[in-house]
Image (cartoon, protein in one colour):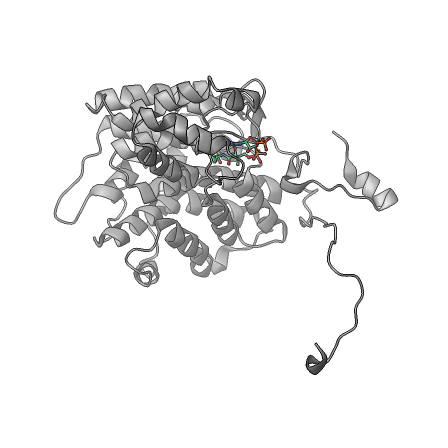
Length: 402
Ligand code: ACO
């Protein structure tokens, strides 16, 4: 790679690269992707191994600290998660201000940003202990806020976290328990959630992570930076795609309609795109989608939902699209979002929570990147240039002469 910063200093030149197709914004030792070969490594470990063998908190520790934890370290990390999982009671008032049918992503952006108002005494970004405390609070509290957003939507009281439960089981408990009925998270659901969270935990410099880094480069506090990442994730071209995939599958309705929708996706005058297909970096099958597709079979079978019509439709859609010249030529394969919504739906997670689920898992990646950036002596404010294409000099005219 060319280090453009030296060229810039010497000759005052810069590159024009909309969408950052060919621009690296940083050095990072967290996640490696080989898009041509369909390889994804977290700190060097293949995603396939982590997805089948690790717990989400082990992976979170790995992303955050660079090494897999030993037993003692994992226990301490799990205890820290339990200790930080309660949100300040006054946040309930803040939550209560949202309209009853506010999108949970809108609630998440606002409430996570508001955490900076609750932790203002430990927001010194130059203090490594403050930075770590914020990182732990974010990873521990985003699930609590996410479940509270859901409870707000359905008009039920917030359910507090339970320290005795593991991270994923605790989230399911906060989602589905009520003051009058306990909820015992099933092992299948917990396992499936653990896997989906691992697959979504990090993906190097995607739009939301780059947003977190750009916000953080100015010295903004971590809660504000993660709120910015959540906002970026929400878009349908990024994390919002998992919600859009289910909308699309329902719209297609039946395999007989697939050719019509593929024609729409190919038509450049039609804004319709095949949601859950295509990726900026993967020009081969997204390794995460491959794992999720396999797990979809297992989860649906174990939940006695093996004839799930949306899953059948998704499988056929993939098959037909991948034998179509348009998709083959452009190397458009299913991405991580194509099948994840089908599992979330089978677990009883409502559709408007799908992107929130993504945000819970990705918080680990965002926080790890923010921590890496803050410890990097080369960190400087992110400040892209532009190619100006507006009017050149013109003189002000009084309003009566315009
Ligand atoms: N359906 C139809 N055509 C597509 C699709 C699609 N899903 N994705 C890309 N294309 C076409 C484009 O029209 C373009 O065609 P052209 O060369 O004839 O003009 C070509 O493939 C290249 O696409 P770009 O838009 O240039 O690719 P880019 O890297 O900018 O975008 C993106 C990647 C945003 C993921 C895109 O593929 C897309 O919109 N996919 C659907 C949304 C989606 O699933 N997003 C989730 C991404 S994964 C994640 O964030 C977790």
